[in-house]
Length: 100
Ligand SMILES: [Zn+2]
Image (cartoon, rainbow, N blue to C red):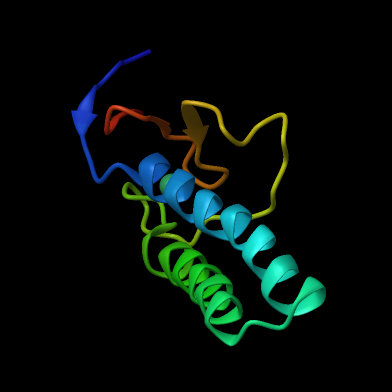
């Protein structure tokens, strides 16, 4: 088996960033909309969700085969430091390298 560590776009960082945006929007949304309607807080919460989703749509692609990767949140596999593309089986690390 040939191991090739090559620098690629660090997709795991983008995914982590997107997850942080989406999860941190939850308290804003709850406070801003449900508890006490505060438009500015609701707008911040909504913006975080939009930024998180946009990050996924733009950057959550396999840098090796360029296919859009499935995004489902799985607490056992997300927040990890490696990701394996289900299409080309390239493994990505959070230091921005990949192995084919
Ligand atoms: Zn791939």
